[in-house]
Image (cartoon, rainbow over all chains, first blue to last red; front, side, top):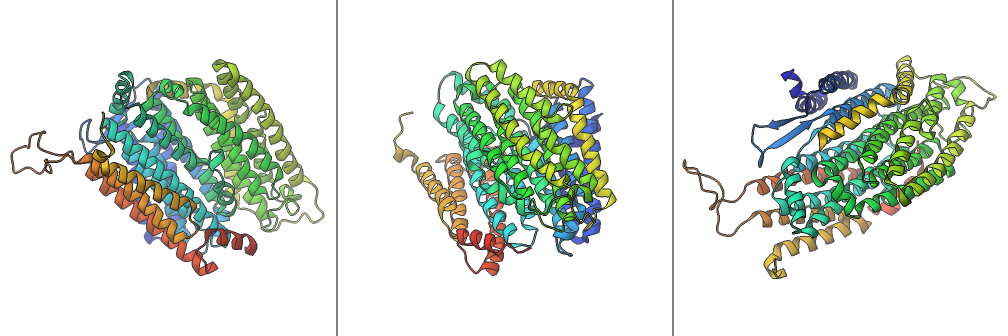
Length: 495
Length: 125
């Protein structure tokens, strides 16, 4: 069992090593290495989750064996290992389910670079999940930014390049703010490790000194990470980036990278500042308000979209809004609902991106709704996957989205007051709008078409992976209670 | 803590520089100027870190065999952080410059608004 303690460090290291040696291989080998990497890491993370479910306590991995005030640390608990397993699964599914599109979207001779970026991204997300010190998280925030930029600009067309420039600029603004926040926090407390930071921050708050710098760093970190994950007023980069990049890249960006940032924010809130403190500062209200606005505006924009991938991208803004609403409640139930919705959105949205990519391919590369008519009849697995993903995010029972909406509503009612009213109204409005745009799309793709011949059919592997993701989405809805309990005990290990 | 601004001249300067870099990165339309702004912003944070990490009259913790006492040395961690940060910002700058070159070759302009408009108009596959 001592071997399992090396899983967090070994997974980050393995991603780094694989991404470096993929440099000398051709695309095919790099692809196999990426699949292998995410499969092995998935198995290791599941084993780690099992280890914690046996009742073992969370542990800290000190890198270089330096003690508390100096060293770099990784920390693993149940919440981290469950997140890591989910992320590995999504990376595997997105790469395998999107391999058919990667083949046509990226020129030959550059395919291995795409897989290098995917491996690096996995390394960054693993580190963001497991990290226990602020500077490591800053370094991996930047690595995540670089690899995400690489993933979006790997498609060789003008719109992808222009949108990745905008993506990079907004993300650099976000990481600049994060860096300043980390520096101020380090300057006031003298610590970088989350464990000692927590006690330092709390003792500073109790004797009332350095209130302003601590608030400033809290605000800078929050704003920086919410810019990077695409919260409402900072979302302008998001639709273009998700619509014009490589299909698998969009799936990875929306489901893995943005979740890594949000997870880091949750970690900072619970482990460094403490939820009580975050609730007492008014940053929570801001997150709550922006989340609600993002919910409504993202859904409204999605109803206006004329292109399937833009619609899915705008619906991402709405879903990110859900996560921030739950986080903005500032309670433990809210945080768990946020984590649960992160998982639901990650599984649902990656499936939606992949299936919409397959539908676009089945309609000869056109992504407007008129060309997509009848595409689900040409590519049946993709049609089913899209329908299930849409149903999940709308909130149809038996699927993950339904459960997470219930958890968000429960958390809001437990918080009480105006929060409950706003959340319930927002949930109602957004469910209505979700139904509106997803139903229209599902009807469009199943509409009988005059020429129902397959333009280019996705491979068997891709369809198999889409079916596996459909099953996963159902599993998330049906087996939600054990997962909720696991997240709850994971969060208790956090504090 | 009744210190005047003059006592913290480095911190004040670095925050001003941060503001300059931040607004340039966010608001300037020229891609090269945006990258310059990003570098100013990052460098200002390193100045902030380095100035807070330095204590006048103390030296680097490099011993001559005998362990130096804590009163005479400076914590080396801020300097380490600055070095790491510089490496990170160099790699981000390289990536942004490469992207800028590709955009310039394709559209012949560095203005991000123009590039986005041209890309929208071109809409090539």
